Image (cartoon, rainbow, N blue to C red; front, top):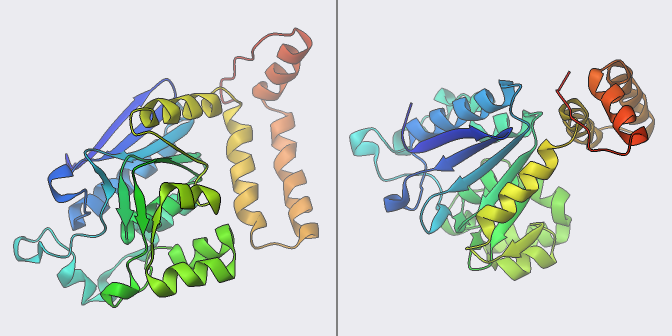
Length: 262
């Protein structure tokens, strides 16, 4: 698998790192495939309870690599043949359907595809020096990887329209103010903050966390009555789980729970 996408698991947290700093972590065709496989691998691993997505170097991801088609590493040739793209297995679609919580640690700026990739994560922490660049319309394209679906749901139609139509670049403080990220921290603090948040998530009952994420995702397209019904159905197997019993027992015994994901 490509060394341009690094993968590691420690203390129930999988870390996926875009590792092409010399090209600002622009994503080539092989990297798309590797990223999809790593996301699916983490989601299928019962030991993994949270996923951190980040980048190496000064950039998180400057978008898709459209310049390497002469050596087979770029996406220019693929872009001209959209019928050949497997949209069901592209990272944004896979990312959206993961049950494992995802944290994007924006170590640096994200543009185009990189911005969509960050928005596709459940939680975003951002280095205070980083920027989000919605540069699609300035390049004659549109947010092709979920941005037109995610952005209006995050910040409302008017603000999303303003950002997408103008191709605006946003600083970390502005992103935090409008709710695009959870918070901005210094670049030195970012890895620790992301690890701390991932560990906090991983300390909870994984089946309950994953079920909560599933219900939140379904709820975005359901009526309230349908959603309440689905939540009840989701609760039934949780009531039979070992983690539910451990959660109740630890509460009564006034100690920290030891969840096993069963």
